[in-house]
Image (cartoon, rainbow, N blue to C red; front, top):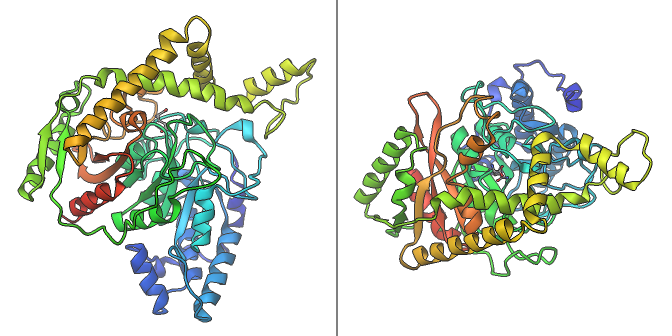
Length: 495
Ligand code: GLN
C-alpha cells in the first residue's frame, strides 16, 4: 500500500541530521539533555523522522504523523523556554500499534475492513501518554486484527526484522518491535493476546512486557479476544518500561475489567536487592520443539543467577500440551463475536458490489474486507460456539483454562516468579511457517500461557544464537505483581 506520508519527506539533505543522530540511552537521559539545553524536542523528533525515512523499507510504520509531531515538539520547546512544568514523558517519542484509537487518526488493525475509518476518541492508554507530554510519532504495522506470529498477515505487507531482513520480526506487534529495535522511536505500544508483545521483542532483541490482565485499560484497543487482550510495552531498558507502565496503567471508568487496584510506583522501587524464589517447569525445557541453544542458554542463566543468590525450583506442570489448543479454541470463539461488528454498516469499508438485501451486504463486505487468517479464525470460532459442539470445545476449553489458572496460583503460593523460554526458536524466515497453521500456532507454546492464566510476563533480550539472531527468555509474575517482575528484570539486565 502506498505510504501517503512518504511524500512529506523532509526537504533537508539526507545527511543533514547525521551528525546529530542522537542515541537516547533512556528517558532520564533524554530529560537531562533537554533540561540542560543540550537538545531540543524539535531536534529529537527531526532525528527520529530522518531515521524513519532512512529505514522505510522495514515497513514498520503504517502512517507517520510528521507535521503533527514537529508541531508538538515546537510547543514543548516553547514550554521549556517558559520554564513550565513537565509531564513524566515530556518529549518522549512513542509509536503505537494500529489497533489503538488515537482521536482524529486512522486506526485500521492492518485490515481492509477498516479502510477509511478514523478514531473518534482516544484509547485511555493513549490519553494518558498525551497527558504526560509524550509525542506520538505514528502508528505501527501488525498482523491483521493482531492475529498472527510473524507479521505476514497485514494489508500493509510484511515488516522486516532489522537484525536480518530475510527473517520475520514476530507478530502480531511486529511494527512496534522493529520501530524500537531500529531506533525509530523510543518506546512503542503493542497488544498481547497470546504473546504479541513478548514474542516479537524476543525476535528483535528488545524488552517487551505484558502486564497482568486488567492492569491497563483496554478502552480504545480494538478487541481480538477480550478476556485475553492486554496492551503491552516495548523498550530497550527496564526503567523506561517501568515509567511508561506507571503512566498508562490504572483504574478506568471506561473499562470495567481494568483493575481498581492503585498502580504501584514501579520506578521508585525498581532497584532492589531481593533474592527471588523462581519456579521453572521441566516440561518446558524438555519440550522437543525447543531449540537446544535456547535450552542451554536458559540453563546457563539459572546457574549465573544462582550465583547471585536467587533460587530456582523445578515444579511439575502437566498441562503444557493443552495450552495451545485451549488458547486457539477460546480466542477464536471470542474473536468471532468481537469481529461481528464489522458488517459494512458501522465502520470503514462497505462493498461497492450490487447488493440485494442486508445479508448480501454483510457477506460481500466481510468476504472482501477480511484477510484469510482472520476469516479462518472467525469460522473456527463460530464452529466451536455452535449448538452441538459448544460443550465439546468451548465449554471444555474453559474448564482447562480454569485448571491452568488454578495450578498457576499454586505455583505462586511458594514462588515469586516463573521462568520459561519466550519462544521455541529464534526468528524464522519469511514463508517458513506460513503454509502450516499448526506449526505457526505451536510456536506460541510459551507465550499463550500467561494470557490463559491472566498473569504478567516480560521477555528480556539476553542472548545471541549461532545463526546471528538475538533471543531472550521470559519471566512471569502473578497478575498484579509487576513490581517484582520489574525488580528482578532490572537486576538481570544490570548483571
Ligand atoms: N500469535 C498469537 C495469535 O495469533 C498471539 C497474537 C496476539 O498476542 N495478538 O493469536
